[in-house]
Image (tube, rainbow, N blue to C red):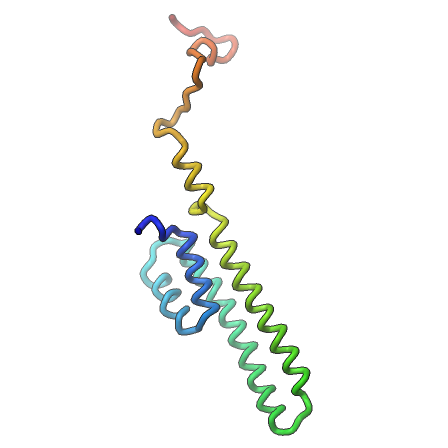
Amino acid sequence: MKGLWTKNWKKALIWLCGYVSLIAYVIAGGYVVAKSTDKELQKTAKQVFVVTLIFAAIEAVLLILSSIASLGADMGNALAWIRFFVTLAKIGVYAAGLLMALFTGEGSARAVAAKEEKPESGAEETPGKNEAEEAPEGTQTEE
């Protein structure tokens, strides 16, 4: 089960917590910033923090505008469209961050599979060739 939580999955969880709720982000992102020694995870947590604050500020402005509209200003239709576009932007930004967290970096499935396929020793052996064939031209190998 420990192998499931790669760095990319942890970053994706941070992005998901930022989208779901500010409180969920504070728990997950705050833990990463306070307790983790991994700089990449801390960087992701800080990026999500900035994005979450931006959307919290936009939603606060929309709340103020909707309160003004409830006092009699004719802004209901415009606010509905603005709220729709903000929701689309929020979903797009968090989905893009989540997908980038999953499919980029060292912890991606392709990178892990490539590391597992490499042999343990530093030099790869080519079947069918001996030292004389692998030596660069102009150098002699002893037989």
